[in-house]
Image (tube, rainbow, N blue to C red; front, side):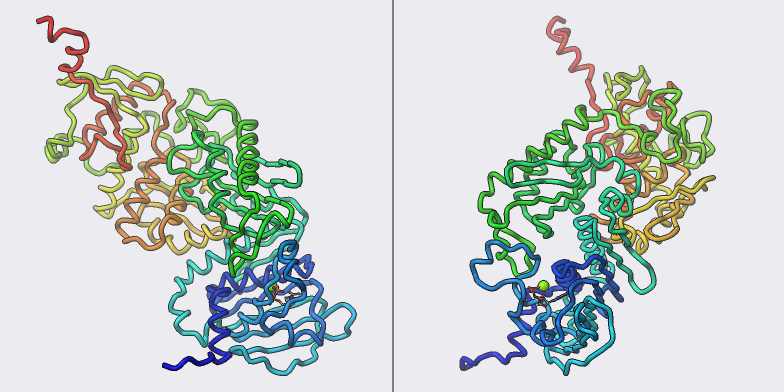
Length: 588
Ligand code: ADP
Ligand code: MG
């Protein structure tokens, strides 16, 4: 093929591909424009995850009628004149590409009016072709309406993920900008519901509460750290509040949401040794540095930056976070107890330390005996199950000796001593019971006298809604109870007495891990996670009855030697080994 110049249409679609990858990219560019225009209030409306419609309306400066046509041209910007300005950028935009790009891959209508003009102007752009500007009556500000995104780039459309995923990207984006700009009013709605609404009163903790629920917001630690020309503000989670993925780690640099590996590393190093392996903090951190310290022109969608002096920034972030963590939570909590995080629990001290199924959960008819002897389980744990077990994995019948450190059970078997981790063991027991019931499609559910009400961040709420049937399979009766809020009305009888909202949060976390694993695999993984959360913790004193019941249940498990996540439930000190250790072997 001979060399040819690309038609302007193809060229602009190629260029648009760099900036506009998915509906959330459109939302991001339009939000940035509104913020740059000094808007106080920004209203975002989406339909069909932004594929059908994205509209962003602001009350900012507007665009003069004689500049509107220019605004949609490529490389047209009011924010940059000389290339030297690139290194002192104080606006979010500067490339002059967003409106042109969006206009070339959608049907876009801009309506704008500046304060000192009596009327506004409207311009329609379709597939990169602008129509005639028309005068219209409107208020000061700008509204950009983007319909049928990628209608003329079918290949792009095919690359879009499910509505749930695209929608989640938009929700996550808008919530982060709302957090970053607490003095602006944000409203996000999807045509039917208002997904997020902030008041613009500058209260970041209130926005956190709207996103994560009051409990989480209350626990978040505020950071305020300053050092010659740099400032780090925002919130980090205490070590007791974690997630199983990095998705809730957020960094803004000079008002721009960025993904920066080195900042993430600095953050995680600050948490080092304070978190369990595989757990990550939640953060909303806002770094302010001199514009000349950061190069924002390294990524077409401006999602990455480069620092002039990376080491300085890195250690500033690391030190600030560490200091805050240590100031607020000097001792890592070795015995987290569910009752401390349950909304329904009165603040009075527990009657017996650690027995969280006995205190505070009045909404459940609590059995007077033991948490382990659940009345629900299908086959009573008897010899027929023991016979079924494979020889290798099984454990012999054990005689309970007692509990040490409120964490381990000590037991004697025909072949020596067994030290059993009560948390891991209980996790295993719950998991096998739940999976047996699940396989038999009969998970006895226990209705809660007072349903537990849980508020989730919008994107988690969305995921939960689309996964409600799976929860049903697992014995949870959950229903929507208002925007981003859910009611747990029943849960598996197996978990009776435990905190239903903790269970729900454990489940939702796992949806976020992975979107489309096989249904069965997902359900098993969800089960494992929720069982982990519901299992007794290290540090909880157990009654004799409870210790014994746990041992009996564990003996009946198919794989009693590991927890569902693969960690050992027990350590075995054989008679043989004891004899050798005490020098009895050699002596005889
Ligand atoms: P950039 O933001 O990089 O300048 P855009 O293509 O996003 O490029 O926008 C082009 C220009 O249109 C901006 O420089 C600005 O002057 C104007 N503009 C875009 N959106 C708005 C808005 N919401 N309010 C006021 N002016 C806007
Ligand atoms: Mg812009």
